[in-house]
Length: 78
Image (tube, rainbow, N blue to C red; front, side):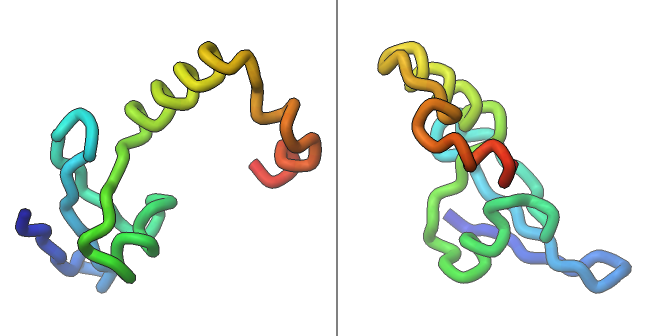
């Protein structure tokens, strides 16, 4: 699995990673929430936003729990 890191005109690094679940390739830059995790550990798995949301919905449906029910203060951090 060879990930590429390239530099854009403005000097911002960009990486390409495959989603762990859907296997599509995505270009990540510093604005992606998982960028820092992957830049520190290039072997770390990446999960795209679509798969992440799908997994969250599945977990909420199967458990009956919503994130706001678990931590009422968490909604202020989103």
